[in-house]
Image 1 (cartoon, rainbow, N blue to C red):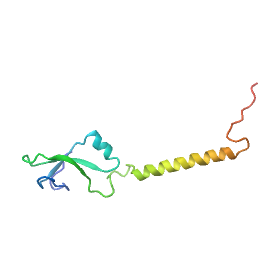
Image 2: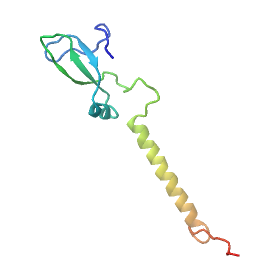
Image 3: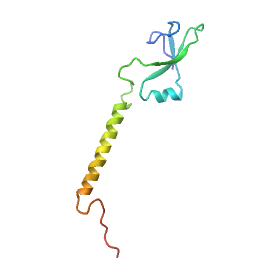
Image 4: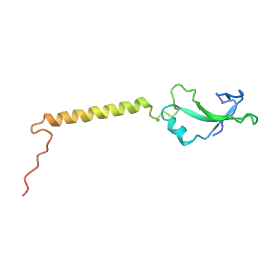
Length: 105
């Protein structure tokens, strides 16, 4: 998961040197669900900085299948609207929302 210096878009906030991308921790993976973050380590041995920086990609993930937070909000909104319409339909039927069953033999 290490990227070359030519591909690095971030510089060390402490010394201005090149950064290597390293594996994220669980909390950082959770944070990445909302804000895309990566963990980096400075290449300079004398510096030793390691930390999390936000991605510079304005659109978030490069993975087109990843759902953005607004997509989750849209799914929830549509689900609530569908449930509301279904309840309204069932209540508008004669007999309300109850289901009539056939008499037992």
